[in-house]
Length: 292
Image: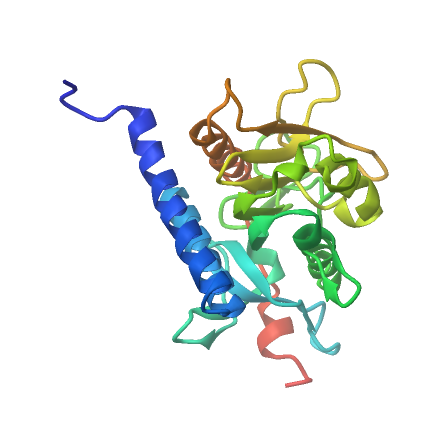
């Protein structure tokens, strides 16, 4: 008998809790017919999960991203974001929008991660329908509404001090962008071409470009990878403009458990974030803006 848990035991514990959340939200959605409650529960659990393993320097929140270019122009506001990761070593909150839910408004300069959350990842949730926007398009609109950058080559020290692009060392400021869920449809990797993730990527066209990762904690991961064999997962920060990037797919099978894949998802997020930092905001553009 073991006298202490293994690493796999500890990771599995988190996964088993998410399995409970998955079943709970299924009941809320299927029988109580409250989509908002089930969706909100999943978003909250994903935020808690990310917040539990990221360094305390980073804050996991949700709400709106604000971008202010100067004191004259009205600041731009993003659509609502399910998960925002901000760097607390730079100004990272304009104001709290809702004390009860913790929803807040954050400056774009502080953002190092943003995610859309779906309970179940499938073609409909990713691409949407004729009358409802999917997660891929929603993230694309968020990125473009406030000028979230993926190709800024400048380097910064923690605290937002810029050291230029030609100097080695420092961190990039381009945030990780992704879609996370606690379940997924098997069609994402089955022979059904219409529902396969690669077909979804092709159908999404350029709107998928900002995405680094799409992952389900129940055993599915699709993220940026090397362009050469064995196509290992790769952090790409900054991106190069007008370049196509390779994605890699893994899913639960006889070789790879859902615990293994969930750990890969969390590891990918952590590896990206630990080499990313916020930059100093122009405080006057926000708080001395003439449109207030």
